[in-house]
Image 1 (cartoon, rainbow, N blue to C red):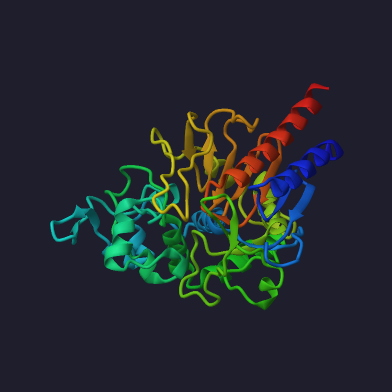
Image 2: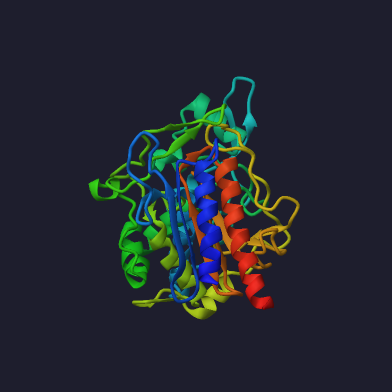
Length: 397
């Protein structure tokens, strides 16, 4: 299977780079429960520099950080230190200061009121806490443009001290909820989130190249972020998250390699086991992977700031739920991914899936804005589809 899929996968990576409005460079991998069965790289790290994209390239992994923060929270639930249904302000007091925004008055000032109930960590893990992003929500965008609300990429406490968009628990909206989960984890452990990750997740998994704090070592192998222009061309950006962030942002702040993230995916494939120790109990993994949204469903992401995101949705027309802390596709996906599998994405067009049923997972990494880039997203879907086509042929043989 590996040789058969590798031929198809290499072709997809190379074609995704070589097409007229393709990507600068891409790294993609697939793993089974034992190790990587495919590793590929194509193109350049930056269009204005000669360095080739390689499998050990570093990426800003954006929202693929979220599942790692969710894992740290699950560990604390196992230990009885985190009550999912207690007010999150018990652990992160500042969240209790936030009010609900009900639009703006005639003078453009936000209209605020007290929430009808407290935000809980369960709500935060499920993106029902009331938080959004300015690139997906008009009210948050107005707070940023008219009232100076800092962007989340500042990695500042002020960036997450935003009003709630609705009463906690009443709907699903994707946003800074997992940044607040990071604050909950820090409040319980008394440690910075990166230190918690290192001791409790990265060391047991052997993730030596994952960090919140960019330095010259990371920079030396860093893929540059590129802006997709209206004519389809790409412009390299001098973009970096803060090297010494005020807040370790549990929703988007990590730098990593695809190889490191595959170690994290393997832990989920192996019922919480890592090569150097257990990260989660098997029963926690089985609990966490289920749909915890009930009858609520996740919705498409509207691209409010067009330079940062297009309108985006996985598998339009199909039902999608949320677990702790992944999207769950409720039906078999067009790629062949089975119902009940896990996955998500990062803003600069990074995508992954975790198929615990069959024992495989994959990750596709580019560095392009806006999110939902046609070339990268199409390449990713082709990559995943090629894998499942090969898997299904092998099963049928």
